[in-house]
Length: 255
Ligand code: BTN
Image (tube, rainbow, N blue to C red; front, side):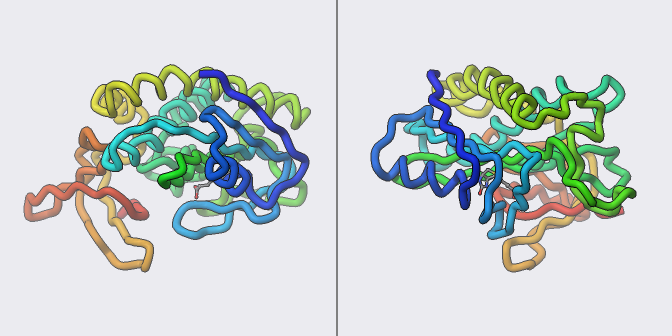
């Protein structure tokens, strides 16, 4: 795929620009990146803090697949992101970068509070699909000395040496687009099934006892994670042996 990259100093949200351009008919492959976002959006209506020092970008795609298949694109993106981010950290940190279903890239052992390194959003509509990605690259000045519970983590904390933000972000962006392109082509023509084992190899949650809450905070499932299915749904086995396939929600680890 030929990507066309547009770089801005500051935007409200790169997602907003890409979604507008998709509505206007732009061909797929548009990548919009900003050094700062003033209204970055996360999943489930959350704010994505976007000060200088992070990589913020959105990709406009037109995959022409069923709505059932579409959701798994965010998991394919997570596979590409986890693989690439592992390349940029010290060897000891590589295996500690994993995917927390559906598409958070986190660092840390599953037994500890996890720390988010990268978030991925997926906005699909009749106009096309906008994949939004935020990577914590270099920590902002003045952040706490001690990495408290659930605080974000930065590539710079994990052995990434490049302190020139523009150079670092450009290097990461190029690596991500190169890694994503073949995965996207294969997902588009063959679906998600062949990605299940690659995803599970990178998954933080396999075997863990978890709860899942919906956007309104209601409990939707509780049990042990036994994997994902061919649509990318999280498979949770409840204490009574019932198997639930979860397509969306927020997962928390129960210890
Ligand atoms: C999440 O984990 O909640 C998803 C975070 C997605 C953040 C990225 S940053 C670039 C793009 N623009 C946005 O406003 N959001 C996404």
